Image (cartoon, rainbow, N blue to C red; front, side, top):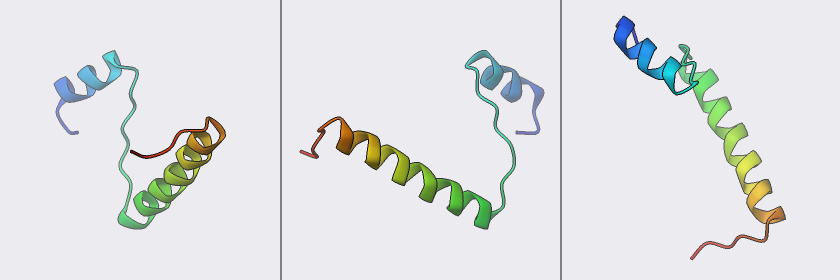
Length: 48
């Protein structure tokens, strides 16, 4: 993430990566799992 070319490539993909500590990252992942599980359930998607 310290390399300018890495940040440029991410910016081209409309991504903004920022540093997160282990606890903040774990909380983010937990939130994302809950969000996507809810969306999948509402859409009627089932694992195969």
